[in-house]
Image 1: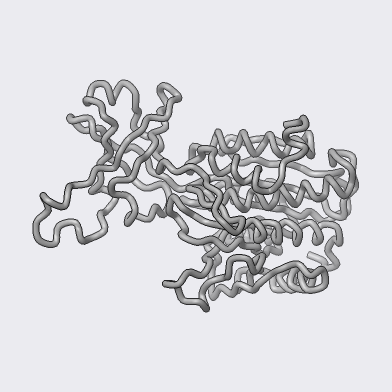
Image 2 (image 1 turned 60 degrees about the vertical axis):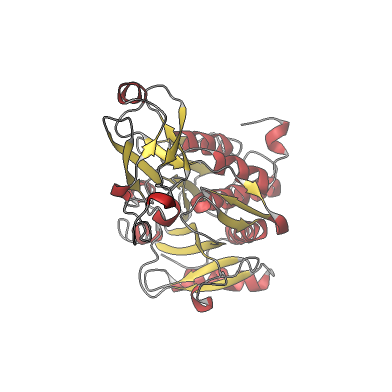
Length: 363
């Protein structure tokens, strides 16, 4: 990915393109290919493995240096076709934690592995006039819904294969106050933050980073399967064997109907994680860096697991010092996940400054 178009891209341009890409868990090919193109601007050493993880090695790798891993997951939630009935309606299962409350009457895209096309479908909804008693008041189970693709059974089976993925049809939109909503902010916003941090490094060191000696041996992973079993991060972190890792994901941003003490605030910057499963020293260094460099940040305390890739990376091989940086996000696991650009930039700047300064602690 070279040329003036990409050289002049800003954070929101990267975010827009990535979030509109398709990549449900286990079928991340399109999103992974796009992320690889972005990384190739900075390094020639980029690969996509058999599990759709995108891995890039940034700068000169030198013996005796610590290895820092930056991770964000590339997959998005969606559904998977499990059955086509004799009327041509599709039955589906969940790929990740789909919010079932928003499914009825939603427009969807069925990603056909047979034709490579995206087929428009509708999740069926019984008219209120035909409902009786309490019917329709409960949130449907995923097994209860059907998708109408406008085809008879024979034609549907010619175009759609069992195992094809389904996404809610929702294009990325810019809102007021430099906010964006999309089906896949979780976690393409994190991928964007890491890419922008590398862009800042590129501007600092003058372009392609292949021959640049950075304070760390730096590995970037855009990992697959996070929404189903965090499998991509397990595989990639074992291979890289890092000393430290920063996992970038999204976390809950406050809304009027959510408990304030359990949420971050949009516009207040990166959420620096503190948890029993995270390395407190790394968290403290990021907090200090945020204060010293006047980078907007806030603290996110988790009582147990983080429910991010950090849970897998931290216990990879003989252990990795790991911390999370999260982007405040509203309406998680819906087609309107919402973030603010300044929060992504805060995460990027923290990572950039951390890499420049290097680590002072031994493993």
